[in-house]
Image (cartoon, rainbow, N blue to C red; front, side, top):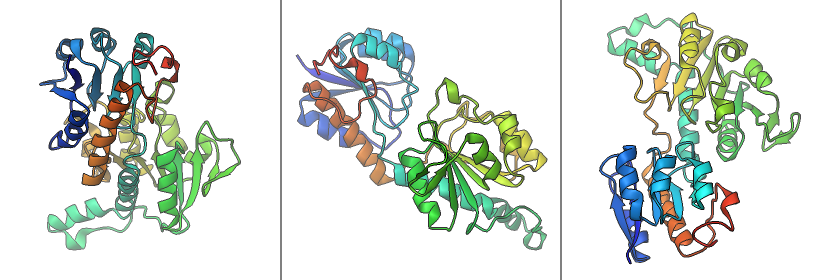
Length: 328
């Protein structure tokens, strides 16, 4: 019987890199024509694995996948798969947590620098013929000696800190897993309130879970320093975007860089799109040719490992061990 993997969706030019890995292991690819729950549930009925990017892998899809042994995420976050249902069914869930650290941290730092130097609004003014119309009356920090606050101090947060130190920035970090007052990889660990109150720039690098939904809303924005900048290259839903738009309009927040918004795509009438010093990119912080090639291959390799009865490199639901359909 043919071993099959369902690829729910992808955003790169082709599936050739993963196809090479999977077909070498005797695994056939089934690529979904759309990401509706009904389509995915129907296609999942006779596959041994699911590989997914941005598609929602719901409990209904997983229940339909009666032969499935692994649901492998192309990427880091796993908020678009029903992990509890997967564990109940004995399905291994994996991700690739470190494939794009350089890309995401370059993106976040690039946003911070561009927003601080007001590159976009100044360019727009010049393009409109206003070379002499730029008023230098907006907040602009000297990066050497400025403070970068990092919310979520895991792999990506620490990678960003290492780069920011090269610009002479001081680093504050908030992470519930790190004891306040400790020094960790160049950062002083403090409370979230301390990060917000003492940082010139704030960058978010946390997963989207119930505890982090709208973790930055009106009260948190008010605690931030006047003229500060906030960047989110993690997940849409971490910031209350209406509150952010209000804070930008009032001038309290000087700039915002968002690689993720909620919902996607954003409503064309969103007040965020009307703000001057805002940069919004369409969830592309992860991308480079090198990172995407690595992601495709490593996701496929996790599928091959689990289908061969081996433990994956990056297991999201360890409670599945011992009850996994794969026998791991």
